[in-house]
Image 1: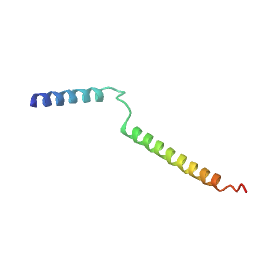
Image 2: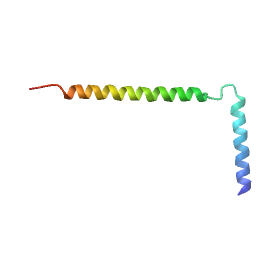
Image 3: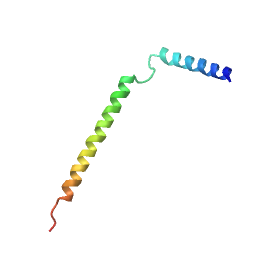
Length: 63
């Protein structure tokens, strides 16, 4: 069991080093966080607009 854990740890270190050595290792943490915040903000804005439109439509007097 410890040989397996040792192998997995070595493999993880090797893969992590490979990712760090490449120039395009993926998105930076900051880019991912900013994107997540913008998506969250967009969802909140859409929810607020939908709520206001629904309330306004429900307040229309048809009588």
